[in-house]
Length: 276
Image (cartoon, rainbow, N blue to C red):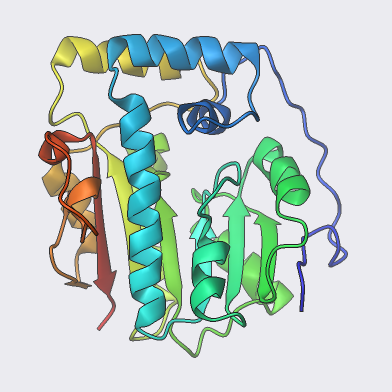
């Protein structure tokens, strides 16, 4: 069926104000992963974050590995439609690539609130796979609007299980943004048998001074960085059935090989769970 985007389906194009002089978390993350879709301000901010915590780059890469394994696991359980919110700038190992490798007809809806990300997605994901891959603009902080946008386009069948992917996005929401309410609202709209794939940054393993230096970098970017504890991340899965091994640092979630030394202290938790 080829690639469809919000622009090709008739929705109005979003003007992208790139604001290259202000560091942007999605472009900083792209830099951590070795991508080229970033500006000097992003690289400078990312280097400051790396100077404070040199493990940032390894953490970003470990998170991509977790996404590959987690979506592959969910696809292996028969899930053939996905809602990926806060997708970030497309890079290798995107949800649609993993899902459509398992099932070429799989449908993937990407949602992001940022015109920068949407512009990159439009350019970089053109021609993606034989399944249906769609990009929509909506904000995770307004989960009802996210669901309305998906329903309005008839993109997913909410009578069948859905894979909800929230990879490395919730740590950009402050407590006042009600991240737990957002996740609960999304899950409430999904039927039994749906799965949640979630990863989230943490400061559990770094000194307070390092945490403050890193968050200070992001406070000067376009979004904050809010690390949460393992218990706080576990709370996103309340009412769900966690798949083994539960909430662990991302390199330890069903690794395909022996994890590298220090994997248990990587500053990102991840887990997959089933809605009963």
